[in-house]
Structure formats: structure tokens, C-alpha cells
Image 1 (tube, rainbow, N blue to C red):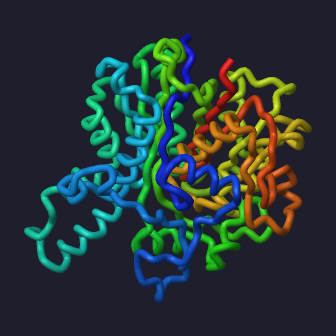
Image 2: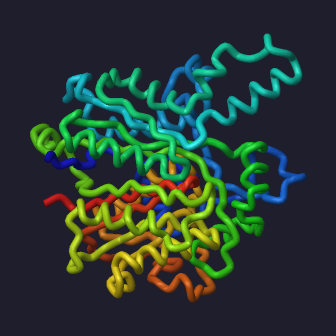
Image 3: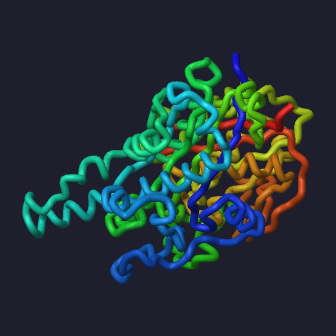
Length: 409
């Protein structure tokens, strides 16, 4: 089997629109959550979200393309450009050996809302001819492939909150088994709009505390729901020998992947975390984990009562007493929950934690919970030389995606 490494990364996020700014803010505990600016929240119970700030699509694409793409696709194209330029892959690969695995949990929701309003107020002739290709959730992958002439395997994934972890994991497998030499992988989301906020609010998923600095509090006893985020995370995965032959910078090795389903409930995790436990075990077994390793876990950590309890239970069931020695944090405390982009952005955090020997914090942590009693790196980052990192994504529908990374040897 072939080895697979990370050679490029790009990000658009609530705490920074490039890798350096993003990771500096993440390690400094900067909160990207604020009162919603995109629409009037007067009639809304939930008034906060983690919006992307100061994003200019024109920095990444011509104006005609901007008019024909949904915001989630613009985020994806921007993060992909950063990752591709970081990797230097384009001039060093045959098009048939380059793939794109970029997903979205929801797709072009802003386009869906806008065009529905046009239909209801102006009739069918007012609906844009670009409505369908702007809305469909595979179109970010399609546009990235077109831009970089990537003619190899292409597989957009839709598994809700696990979308981009599964995208990266499936890309890892495709390279490992020889179907491609490099794959642009990750996810994007842009759903901070009236319809989405109302829908997530009414299914009792979102925090209603409306205090930007104290509403996304993973593993804290006061947690009452997640905060909506948006953006994109893209990484370039590459076969190790291919990367080495061209002297590419290698950030880390992706060494394991677990993919399971709870098969239990549309939104709630299994109370005994059976799917999450199995996914973590699979990633660790494939990744070569042993108990002598120093470990960082970027937890799914949504700040919902059920998720954080179940995830903590899963970690303890897999690692036993060693769980208490591990460094754990939820960067959703700063970025909010970026839905289909979350897994990729958190994979980037995991890679950078390995590469920089620093563990980002879980901010807003004040009140310990007896059901969540591990080391969640409260409020301040810590220096730690780690050997092995796990990035955890647990999505609606029971989808579990766990990625394992290690330092290159």
C-alpha cells in the first residue's frame, strides 16, 4: 500500500482567510463568533453565528464566475487556490492522476433561498438559468476540477457534519490504493441565512444564549447547542514517493481513517457511542497508534449536551486510562460549527498542531461537567510535542468520520 502525505492547505474561516492568520488566531484563542450581520435577526431566537469576515471573491475568480457561483463554491475555490499554490502540485502531475474530493453538507442554500423568492414573487421566468448548477452540492468539486484540469477520481461527499472528513478519508484511500497521485480534498459551507438559522433553531440544535464569547462552550456543563459557522477547508493529499521526488514540503502523513454509521437517529448520537468508538478504533489501527505515543484529538465537540457526552465516552472506551493523558480540544469554540467544512478545517488544525507542537484551546470553558472529565485544553493553548493526531467528525444521520495523522518518518 502507498503512503499518503499532506503537501498543501488552504482555509476560509470565521477566524482568518489564510493558513497563517487562521492558525495564529486559533492558537491565541480568538473567537470568530459575533452577532449576525448577514440579515436582520429581530424575529429570531438565535442572533449569533460565526460568519466569514473580509472575504473578497474577486481575489480568487473573475466577476462573471462570481455571478454564476454560490457563496459556498466561492469559499471552496478560494481555499483550493491557497492549497494548490501551497503544494506546487499543478506543474508536477498528469491531469489523469489528479483528483478532486470536495463536498458540502448542504450545498448552495443561499442560491436556493434567493431563487425561491424570485419564483414566489415574480413567477418561473424570473428564476436564474444558473440556479441548478449554482445550487447542487457537487459543483464546488466540479469547478475546482475545471480550474485545475483535474481529470482523475472525483467524489464529492455529503455526510452532513462529517462531509469533509469523509472527503479527505476517501481521497486518502484512493491514493493509498493507487487510483491517483494527488487529490484536492475538503469541504465548504455557506448557510448563514434566514432559512437555515430558523431550521436549525427549530430543531433545537443551536445555542440560544446569544453571547458571542460564551455560547459555543464545548464540554462545559452549561453548553446548550452549537453555533452556526461557515467557510471552507481544502488540503492537497499526495502519494509520499511522488511528493518526495519533487521535493515538496510535507506537513504530515495521513495514516488512518475510520468511517462508520450509528444507524440510530437522524440527529442524536448513539447513547453508547458505538459508531464513534468503532470509527476511532479503525483510524487508530490503520494509523499504527500505540500507547507510548503523545496524542492530540481535535474533537467534534459541538457544544451540544448529547454530542460532547457521547464523544467523551467514546474516547474513554477506546483508550481507557490513557484518555486522561491525551490533549483534546474543540476549535468549534472559536469557529462555530462549519458543517460540511468543519472536518477539513479541523484536519488542518490537527496537521498544524503536529507540525508546530502546539495544542489549540477550547475557549469559553468555565464549568466542568462530570460526564466530560478529560483534558480539553481549557482557554489557553499549550506547547506539546505530539506524535499522533486524530480529527473527529460525527454528523447528523449518524455518520462518523475519523482521520489520523502522524509526523513524517
